[in-house]
Length: 97
Image (tube, rainbow, N blue to C red; front, side, top):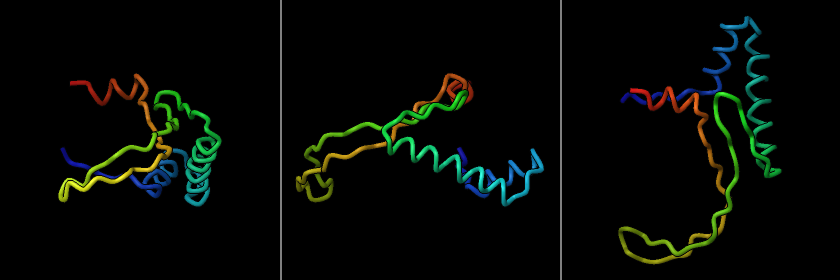
């Protein structure tokens, strides 16, 4: 499987090509969407994008971890992590054989 990274610039270019919206405005649209997702997650809201998926926050408790090389134990602090759950539409394309 070949792995390719899609950047903000790539998304901007897609919007530009498919809609003829100027690149500068296309870039602003991408930035505004990303900023809205971040702002909503900061407010601990779920972000649902139809036919794509849901972003949510989960609180992880502190736990004991271990350095695999030295076997030394240490405490991994409590933290919030972002979860992404793909929609059935995305799952259909990802897991279709």
